[in-house]
Length: 176
Length: 176
DNA sequence: TATAACATGTAAGGTGTTACATGATTGA
DNA sequence: TCAATCATGTAACACCTTACATGTTATA
Image 1 (cartoon, rainbow over the protein chains, first blue to last red):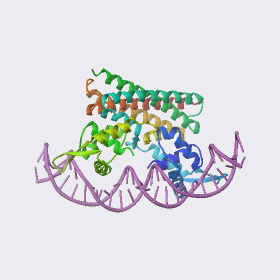
Image 2: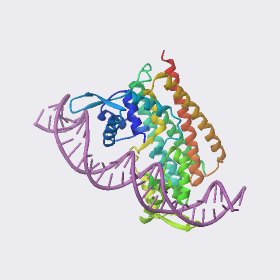
Image 3: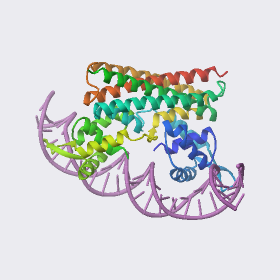
């Protein structure tokens, strides 16, 4: 049940349409943090609006509705963000595959580890370029900040996966 | 739809009951990779058995049924593990919160970043001890391996979060 | 002998995904 | 004028969570 909070957060960073939010979930955000399709976003926006947490502040061309967070919405977002974390839910298919390598026969395990290492290095390289586009002076809070926080985390994340895969492959090869 | 594959993988590592699987999802695995409660596990096991991917190989005391993977199950697991990855689904509430820091006012953002840094360091410290319990010579494949792969990944993961939070806090404090 | 851990299940309700559906605007 | 992009929605189905429900075995 984090979708409403994700929407609240994204709109608090920058107001936008359901379509804008949909694209955000397709990029950075959906890659490391949270995913959602437009078919869950639109109904959820309607629900948030009905509860007074967001409101339509502008109407654009193709029936486009720009949503913004209300004061009540901002309060709820702060409450959720600052609440004791207590193990939020995690579902990460790539990481699941990584651990289940222990279930594979040796040759396949090594093959997969090597592939993971390569793909992670590639991902890191791509993201390093994205990161380089952000000027070092851009503000950390607001729309620029979200991108920076995500890109920086993403690079480090990929590097961890790459190093972990190398470590595991080395250890596995060392076993006689 | 990774639950069946998670179960297949865990049983391929080591046969066990639905109860055993439930406990696994409560530990390491559920923390970084995938979560599931017993109420989804038992029906899913029945479904996998009906499809011939797992089978009951032993009956224990309290009506306990020990499941093992069949040859067909192993084949399906290999297929899924080695299939081109193409962006598996990721849903990570802690990471979502991290990115949405960009939506907070400065004081709260700094407060949260400091808290994240501390909690991550604590998590890393705890896991380093868990990791130290695994002998360096234990085999990487099989039940010991799963724990090792997860512990090693977990330590590195926590360290990344800690370093990232420190980096973000430093950058934010540096802004005038 | 009582408590904790073991062990399995169903049902209702909520959430999320896939497929279906429509239409406007912009730019090549 | 055609294709891509923008923009929003509904319906059916699959999936997951919470609450309910039951009973056994080991151990302190």
